[in-house]
Amino acid sequence: MTNPMNPTSPADPTGAPVLVTGGTGTLGRHVVPLLRRASGQDVRVLTRNPRPAADGVAYAAGDLLTGEGVDAALAGVEVVLHLAGDAKHDEATTRTLVAAARRAGVRHLVQISVIAADLVPLGYFRAKHAAERAVAGSGIPFSTLRAAQFHDLTLKTVAAMAKLPVVPAINGIRWEPVDSRDVAERLVGLALDAPAGPVTDLAGPAVRSLGDLTRDYLAAAGKRRPTLPLRVPGAVGRCYREGVNLAAPGADRGARSWDAFLAETFPAGAPAVGTGRVRTG
Image 1 (spheres, rainbow, N blue to C red):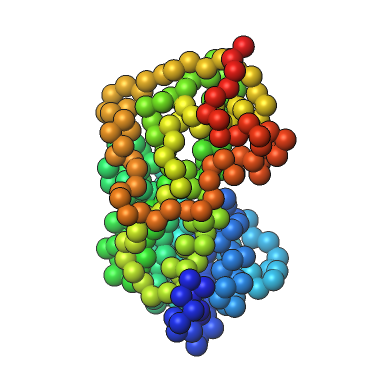
Image 2 (image 1 turned 135 degrees about the vertical axis):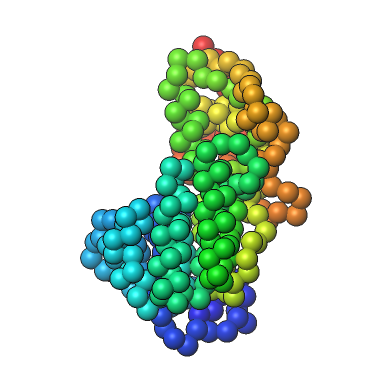
């Protein structure tokens, strides 16, 4: 296989299929076709709801929570991209995958995680860190990419808040949202290269307060809502105010901005995007 980011990387002569978990999710929908085009290898997606194969992509029935079908899905696979996960079961499902991958002789396991997984005192981050430890301690050569919050998740968060009669403008929390397409490109490059262990974090091009992200969404979507500044108390609020969740200096930065993402999502509202302000009333 040839790394599209490094054309001199050696080709994989085996022609083994690449397995992707979470291949039908937000990130997987970008990763799977890009991986197929970049590698020329067959791609196999592990899913609880299989569908007919198409364009070199096969769908294998399997459940990482119960383990059912996972060994069969890994048969003949040498490279795995692990994109599936949730805060409640992330460690357990990752350990199920790791055990099956060892039995299958997988030679490279690529994992997506979140920036500051070991530092932010929230269940989602703790689960991601536990999954990281499961992969790192597996004995399987691996690459782990920590990324910032995707634009898609950011949109879901601010849209949910915008349903309230008064929208909280949480300025003490700062994010650096990254486009899932930029993350997909980075993951495919890792999958087609040699295992690299923990790699450089990937964040979006700018650090923005959650309040500004919310106001940008309201402007782009043409919504008029009163906003109310809100401070998050306790250890979580302090963590975010100190910027513990942000990428360290030297992190890689995605090219696609939050403003551009909103302009794509709400083209009619594109001129208002990026102002960081919205009239109330």
